[in-house]
Length: 518
Image (cartoon, rainbow, N blue to C red):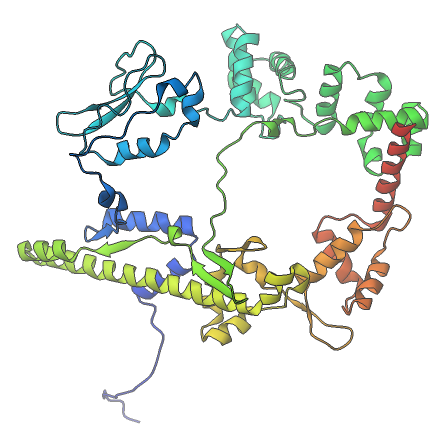
């Protein structure tokens, strides 16, 4: 068979992942914070992109400079401390926005707490806050300096160390030890490693740690729960031998084995109840009383609110949507000056990237709104009646309803939150596996079954603790066909102990209440 070259035409279809398609997919799965960071990076990289500014409505509300300024507040009505409650906020906002108006006499000098607005040479104005002397603070005045900063646990301990340890060497050891104390107040480091790093002996490091353990909050610097509780009890002068024996056997306390605890501690039932009650009043994580960092609240991407006709209004949160525009004027100006091929190629790439970014952002917003609207339609009963009416839902159901692929729906619901009358929830919350109905009716959502199990356990008493078998029977009476191992799995996922341990806890709590009442 002779082999010879030849040409063939063949037609086929294939999916090509272009850079633009990859960008659109990437934007779709980003959270609102990650999206803002991505857009900011594109704004710095691409000269043709610019941030779309909101129209400033204050510009249309400027007063006539020829009119008389508003009269100053009645000085006789403002005594010491009352000026903060006076209606001066709108006037101060006007000072910040109306820069072309001479407001020099809005706040006349009136002794203590005086404020004046001085017009600049260029027609602008600046606000000066003075005290009785009316001294000029200049441009270095920073009102943010008066804001109280959150004190962290490390700052609090370092301030006490500076007073307790005048020796610089011991203070250096203390600073290293404080750096190894976590946010809960426990020392998580290795004393031998600290000693080797600083060239000190282990005895010196242990001695400084004992000093830190005397600081506030009580119990800080402990290496275990037993030591943390012991430090707090010593601070209250309540750590006697019986109490120390109880702290050395906390595993018996966790199992509610009071008979063994009475034998170990050598006390009767009444004294043991008092000791356990005192331990429960201690703080197992003393460091959490101090700030550990900035907490970012959840910002919903979608809002859902009820309409007057009983339907639901679904709208995007405009504050989480970056607004960018392609500066066509700047592109035309630069294109005329471009000479070399490299300049023209760079400008064309920037134009294409900017256009694709704006389209991807618009498509992302539309897709999120479409998916959220379908989820609201599917879970209408949950929004009206609560979690017990949550329907089983999967990605395929939503994808088929809106004509999209499951992977697209999965990306949209990742790291996105929706504000509903039931709270701010992640979009993934509404997707739950189904559990068959015992009567052959509509299936139940797994999340709704978990909520039902939790409600049944919270309603039980010390004399009627529900076992997993009893929970299965009660759920079947409610029309939920569920196995015992599934109930146990759901119970453990919610950190709910077994029926035996719950019975011990409830009986122990009842005994403590009876001892305190007696």
